Length: 233
Image 1 (spheres, rainbow, N blue to C red):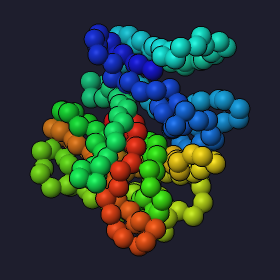
Image 2 (cartoon, rainbow, N blue to C red; image 1 turned 90 degrees about the vertical axis):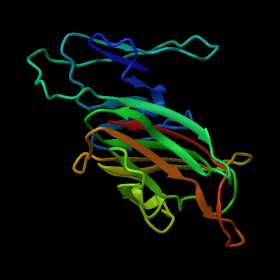
Image 3 (cartoon, helix red, strand yellow; image 1 turned 90 degrees about the horizontal axis):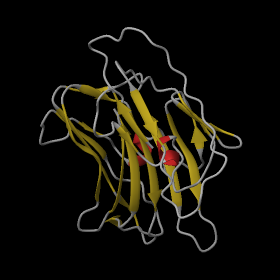
Image 4 (cartoon, rainbow, N blue to C red; image 1 turned 30 degrees about the vertical axis):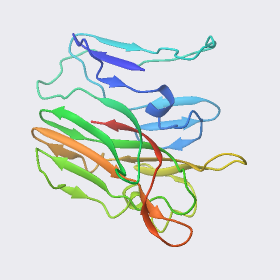
């Protein structure tokens, strides 16, 4: 999916359709949150405000080798005066493979100007056994070399604690997917919305997460994992 506001040549939103709506790993699962809801049996709903002043263009591109049939959608909008201070909505998808030498995944970087960060979706493929969610989510604001915000662990940032234990979906945070079928690696889907607590920046923002965890033998280690995220701001 790509969203263009007004006269943009590059999209403000670019992400796989499922990931944008919070469903990672190419899977569909229910999400009951404030800005996004995914409902039986294939309803993807988005309620983020997306102001534009002159025009809006939304594209969906099929990148698979198979034709895509029965695609239905509805876009609701209203026309009126938009405040000069109203910000454009952005979302960006990134995927990387962490290594033990560099266990950091970049959620967002290269953003300049004034804005506020409003959410994260993560699809995490675990490439080792044991606990995977000890990495810190870090926010570097306005050129700071040290993180302005540093969380205590991945599961804490996404609203859980003590290794989750079960899946959940709530208005501002969730862990709606845990899956490990026979012959598959463990896969996790998570989201966190900063709606009552937006992370504001004046000139720049960089967001990262570490892949850290415990091996089955109890050793604390950096991990090699496959991580895909969507950043919303």
